[in-house]
Image (cartoon, rainbow, N blue to C red; front, side):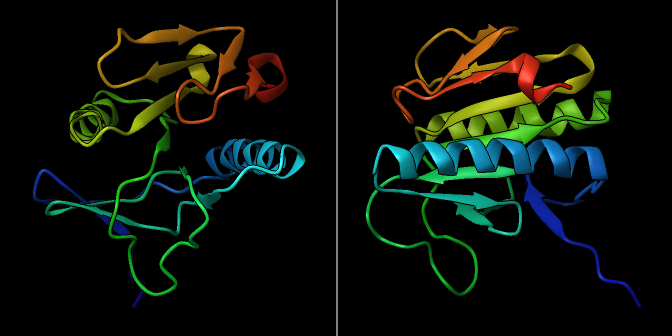
Length: 159
């Protein structure tokens, strides 16, 4: 029997939709964020999708997450605090996948997490900073409050 990884979104078990393209984009974002932290000698951790975050009764597994500070992530189980920045890759984008992301966005925003929603088919990234209007990046994405000084050129990401 094959077990599937699932998130808990709005009280429902939602199976992850793994695919190679999403994994490649996530890995590239993770690499660039990690490199930025190391080059600038900034504290923090960049985590991949296998790290879960407990937010209330929800369990989210963003494709990439950034946790600031000097403490390492929880080594066993899901992280008990939300990330400073979560990256959700919506590929292939569907009406249903966007509904789940919208629910997660509300929860993330309520706890102060900045969220990037990556939509490869549209070649854009939405930057959701709590308390601010959504910024749509179609050329260069900046790290905002979670990763000040970080930039990502979308042309380099969406090859």
